[in-house]
Length: 608
Image (tube, rainbow, N blue to C red; front, side):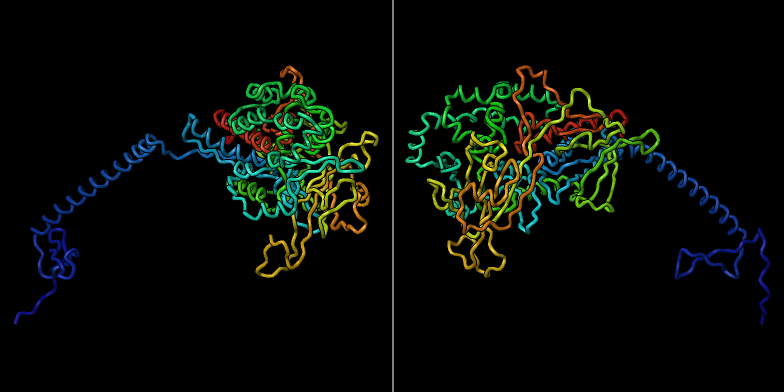
């Protein structure tokens, strides 16, 4: 038998011959007993082929990647979808009242509007908006923090300035009037207004005016003549023009009170600004006892001033309010909801319960400066201090500029205002809330029982303006308050609830009034108990608007106080404390800020 010898040695001339495994045809295996020269030649050719193939594939992939890196971005740019350059900035707003909330809306709307007009479509402006307010709720001067545990809503404080239209204007809320509102309104005597002097109820009116019974209307005509139908017609034309123009303010680029006055005067005429209210009444044939007994108390309720101190426009605003903005018997807190909704949908951050103590312009980086807002806890907790940097700030609250912007050692402002800027003055108001276990009655002569839901005093010329009687501006019945412990099937509109309610009243006065003085003024019975007496001062309640000069060029007041700092103040000198006006004016200032931002983005001033 032949004995197998050792395998031949490996040499370059005799490479191993490859066959393929049955289990994996792609994995080569070496045949132990076959080596030949022909296999060597085939293997060399195959190796060269694979190397060339790999080289070609690598070159192709490299070229494809290079072309892709160029062609793909060009294609994206052609389609307007290139990666945007993001410009981040922060906007600080001091004040969470209607004007401050309007500023937020105006900034957001403006950024959206101006983004479409940018020459560079690759710029994306992202604004973070922060709102500060000393109150623990939004609403500004319309918020009163109770010290007696009562839950006071915006409607309780400012029912005379609000109407249902504002719900859709500010918060886009559409609220259906509940069927029980009219029932309780009738039960409480809402809509009836009494006018009284020191001894008796002199006369009365109904709100709205169209609800006046014919019998009472004839009585008023006999007593006051044609003034009865002439006075309600005064605000009609003027206020229609005002309400038509106000929503257009947010697209109006106005930076001064002079320009604002000029634009509005072109829309509604300059007469409402320049004409004294006394002259308007004379032209409309309203005179005598009607002005003293009815019109003057109504105007004082809404402006804090006498007819001799106001313009035709302010008179029209006051009379329209008196007609359409009556106290609501049922309080749902809808206006609070509307303002909060607006802030939420515009993605504004809220710092509530903080008091802004100073705003200063300082360098935060080399050749970069920003506004720094410093604040403290509203409860005056010295440990709770904070500060934050902003690219823009807006003062949307009645601040004293010098106090806010800081002073030098000699008392001068660190940021002096130019000659075109004027501080606006305000008249304070004292607001008092109290409850009673029954509707108020009085021993005043001709006083019905119970008293009308609203009482307006007729000034007594024989007493000083600071006397308790002449300090009183208004008494209003607001709503009923039911005890928290009620049965599950409790109906708050039932004429005989199981647990008797309390009645919430509001008292407005120009000076502090004690409960004793108030009881004496109204001749309340000795058995009347005034509970939860809560009196607070609203320092900036009434803006001191004045009759404007006949030449609009003489009017001063800048809405832009300096570099990157704006204000809504001064607008009240034109529109008064009209809530709708404050909201739309805030939107206008916010739009100005958005326009300024995009001017700077184009000029490379932001986001360097």
